Length: 158
Image (spheres, rainbow, N blue to C red):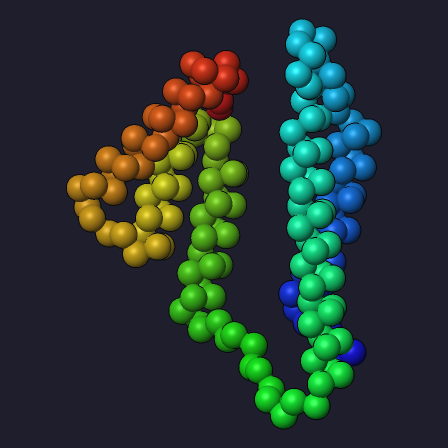
């Protein structure tokens, strides 16, 4: 093997984190509901974690095979990894910061205030800057989510 790629390392990290998360979910959350036979609060997180582990393992094996086959072939072509520009990296870091602020103010400000602010920030970071439609989209999105959780799912939001 010539070298370990970033994709392989990330896939392997997701396999490990997924298995750890699966162990945590199975030890803390019940899989059966006392009311229905559909499943308890641990069912869907476990399903998602199994899917994450499976796809990450497939990616890890694919990257390993690709790296092994590249070292076996005597090809003179060397592919350069994609480079992230400083502008794009700044945008990614701002998105992470926006979500972090959202999580920190969610309980204090409430869902119907914090979610439109996050949506506006993300719309702006993605480049959509219409001053009339953006607030309407943000408020509509927050109201739609709130309605779905409160009315249909009967899950209270902060």
